[in-house]
Amino acid sequence: MTVFKLNGLTKNKLTDYRIKPEASVLVLNIMPNKVVTENQISQLFSDIETPVAVTFMYPRSHNWQHGDQQDLAYHYVTLDAVREQYFDGLIVTGAPLEKLKFTDVDFWDEFLEIREWSRTHTKYQLFTCWGAQAALFTDFNLPKINVDKKIFGVFENQLSDTDLPSDFRMPQSRFSKVDSRIAGETPNLEILGDNSVSGPFFLRSKARNSLYIMGHPEYQADTLGNEYYRDLHKGTPVDLPHNLSVEHP
Image (cartoon, rainbow, N blue to C red):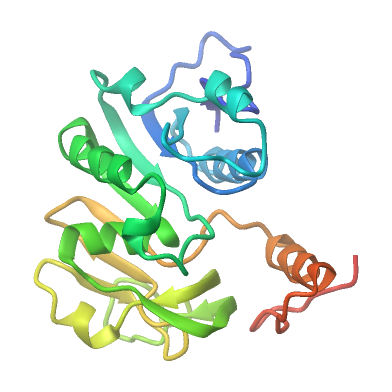
């Protein structure tokens, strides 16, 4: 279906004026490669029947090291620009920040402000990877656990008593996780997907209208393979992605 990217580095133009957006989604895009993430998220929305209007936002206090900051400011909005608006949904992406303490992230205070604002200005929230870990910490004080070996690949749900199929799979690329026991004992938080290696990776809070996905549902078929060869090229120790065949580029 139609995706209207109202701004962003890949903004598209409305060509069919008979189609009107039926849902509005604000995306806090903190992934390094903005263009790739914009296209991946747009592809997900194109697979549903509802026409969606997407607005991309960035934290003004964040120093974007993978592109031109002024260009980003021109194509993206900040919280101040949408503070009086209301959206059907908020998506907060991941970011390669999991090795940092939350309070050491340069835009942490702004993230807290966005979270507080979203409670009254968005109906539903979806958090992925680092965004999910940060939201679980702010919403439930759920601690982030750093791991030495990267959780990398496609991991399946090993629970049998959830709304998700037991073989439901999610791409993962992170150096941290949350504890299954602590998450399971947290009031108003439900674990829908868990794995002995990755830890809980799909959680839900009906009370907060929020989904917390410790993974990358937006990743496409070649994304993990590209990350693997990127790390090899940089000389970064990396194993082949779990449960995924990787071809040489």
